[in-house]
Length: 133
Image 1 (tube, rainbow, N blue to C red):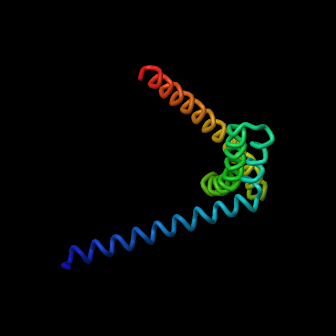
Image 2: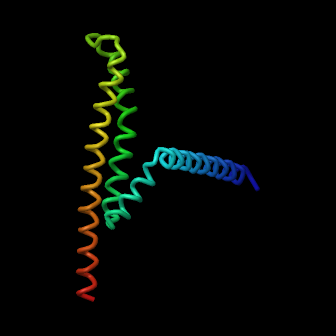
Image 3: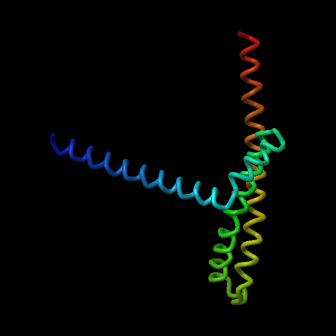
């Protein structure tokens, strides 16, 4: 095993370590969503309406809003540092959080629209191929 074998082994170890880190982060995000009730409320809504699409839409909306609130607040605080005209009050984080929640909801609705259209397009393509073959 030469130098190239050693480098390949080190690269593989680094990639495995990154994969483990990403997996642990994904598990932590899933645990937080479970604790907040996002997943369970989406599943319950899907069972209640008997439509999986409703559960997916609820999950997207809740995740978009939960991710948008801190993102908007942080963006507002960073923007305050660059704009001298904004006052120094704690309301900046509140306004940023509200704007972030709104932006997260809009993004979630856009993703839902894209997923629905993509699903419809794929479904039509598969049906068309099934009819031809």
